[in-house]
Image (cartoon, rainbow, N blue to C red; front, side, top):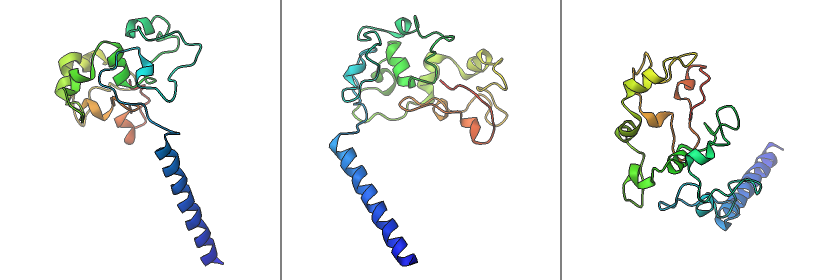
Length: 173
């Protein structure tokens, strides 16, 4: 009986994998295209297969971050943690090339690029000194030198690196 159960589970797993390969390979589920020449606000340039916004959302083609924040305030529909940081940068007028340079295979942006625009890590720690329960930009383990990329991801949801061991509830942009 156990042997038959294992055969059934193996067959189910094989079918599941085959289904995923068919779905992913057919384009029924596709990630947005990475288009380095995309302009902020032109969501349809990358999100061709799956609309990024509801049909009731105003046209964003010519919007920038300031225009988005006219409706999306901290108190109402805040964008922090909802849009990938790459989108916030693009809407703010920072091109892909500004951080990655001209390349067909962009790599993770070095921390030096982050602090060139966002300021020295000591200044960031000063700006966030009142964040509760503790300052996310200074730690007893790393001081102010923890690599920005460990929390702030550009092309996927950012995360609270400290939450691996601690229960700090930060909203990480």
